[in-house]
Length: 485
Image (cartoon, rainbow, N blue to C red; front, side, top):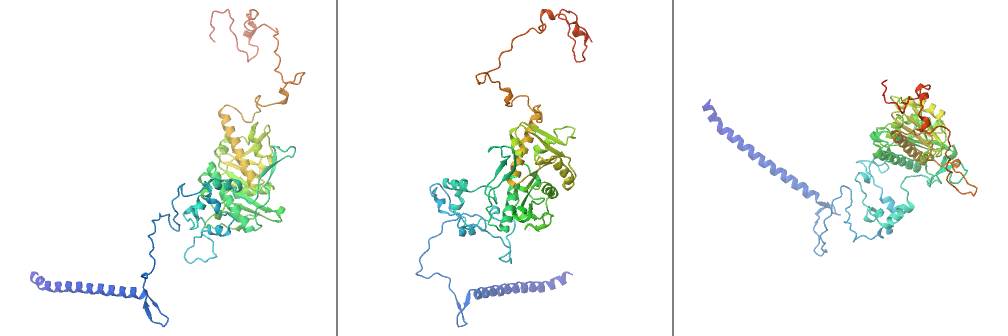
């Protein structure tokens, strides 16, 4: 075997040498092919069909270009902005930017499209400058506009922070006085929309998202809980109702208008959300109960407020079907009530799923038509109003009252009991002959019986008889012996 191996060794060495030579030749052929492809791509076709080499070198007489200053990276699809310091930016610089310029407004629109998308297709839901896509037209003038004096004047003089489709909002009272605190409906001014239903739908969708973010910050919509629905249109506008509802399972602080459903009064989907794989909120059946039972309602809010939940537990037996609150200033904010009114908020028991609450909610609204909210025990609250502004204001007022009731309970006070004192009453003011307020006259001391601990009160045999079960026996003052009972 050793002799055979020595005879085959030269053959093995020869084969190894041939393999190395072939590999070297193959690498050279590949390099030659790459050079050929590179030279071919750098040439262009001339007018007579022949190819000529295009030089990429700058001509000798071309002016020299100064080296560009280094630019700090701001992420993909973003334009680098010069560093801002108070020395190189004027407080009046933002006056040069005209907010009504359509060209500038169009420049702010960013599109995020996938490869092969058509120009007519919608942008990807959830994209935008908040996700890192700052448009190239974002200049320091626009970026720093709210932080200068003139910019703040422009912002707080003309631009509201809430997205809206009407000019203003105010609560309307009973009409007895200009400052009437008892209101039943609200006014939202004039429409600021152009009459385009598509523009209105886009605005309402964005408003629903903004309200959900606001309630999340209040702590009312944690864990994707709660929701908002807004109704527009109706017979007063000679068009059918449209109801915009928040979706289920979406982080309320991150919701966008593209997540919102548009439905009709029969719960048919008129326009689905652009974001795929969403479903309607579990609150949707209950919102429709309110809209059908309260024709004036145009917005319904559902929150998982902590104090709304705790207010349903003020009765330790958890059998009460109502919570009563009176003599608090914020009663004026819930509609149909004033400071000295007795607010009765109905409470319904919770169920495994929210759609099962529909019949209970309907019965509570019929039983307490004066109240614009219903509490769900160990759950939260449903509140509504004849505009989204009124629904929001009333929901905030209800939560304030529930917090007060819970804290009053901790102080040993009952929020549903009329206070004996502490509230101004006309009958408590006594007027003298001159018409001016005077302190009450000092009551004269009268002898209606023996004074306590007086000499005539030493005989207390009647007290020892205990004729009344509530009487406590009193030991005679002269007694020296303690009695053991």
